[in-house]
Length: 145
Length: 142
Image (cartoon, rainbow over all chains, first blue to last red; front, side, top):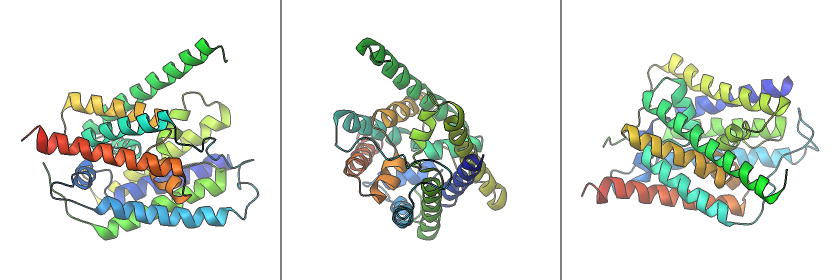
């Protein structure tokens, strides 16, 4: 219960932050990605503000033995650069460049009822489903349950 | 093509809010605020693991709605047609899952903890997105 309360408040801040920074507007995101055009560097400052604040937060969190409303810190289990990371990131970039929404802004714009965001979110969920089915099938083939 | 203005103050302010959100989720739940991971994890999550993910995503959507309620209409339309939106959305969904993260998980949280994987992933997806925009806007349209 407490965990879901914290999660929903964190989500609220995240969505509000995306909206204030105008990152839910694909025109601004594509304006950043278009270095050969009328370049809009706003996205860099969004990242600077977010990374700086998060880095301070993560440093403070080192004083905790465990999270406030959970048993353990779920860090990434992987540490080396591998092929899925490289290929997946390149594929994501192509999609991002085509539509101007990454997953967070897509959901935030979806919530405002924008028709292009609704189409992107549906297709995004389709892409996730394809990945999950592929993972499930390859686990079955390898015999790992 | 719509040209947009550089908006440093809202950008920094919004970024800091996203940072507070990522901190809260880490300190409270020990979870990374990566949207593709939170959404994709719902495919296999059960019980409390599904509950916090749903709560976060509902909160995120309520957050942008709340902003629009307070500040008035916000521009959110993508300057692309139907088939491009479907193709692009599918690539975003599949690519972020295969690459274990998106702009928030790798770009914000991963870089904040100086993860080598996230630094490489962010450089690659920003690079391929810039190349894609250059193709669409400058090469294919002459």
